[in-house]
Image (cartoon, rainbow, N blue to C red; front, side, top):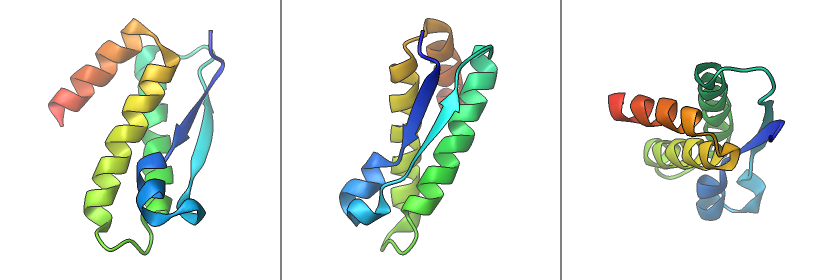
Length: 93
């Protein structure tokens, strides 16, 4: 099982350039799917907030970056229970 998942603001970095690339590692060890999703969301907020500083359209870039970062991190973990939690959270937003 993956012990760490890396949250990356790749979508924003593609638009803003390599200097804006941000990432953060979070541990997956001994966490419920709900706890892990909360940690992924928190990390995505941090890296995407940093990545859109100075952007022409920061709100739009942030939203795109956040969705991409969470989706990618959940896919990297490859846990069906986490995918269900993430899906229900995205549907609620």
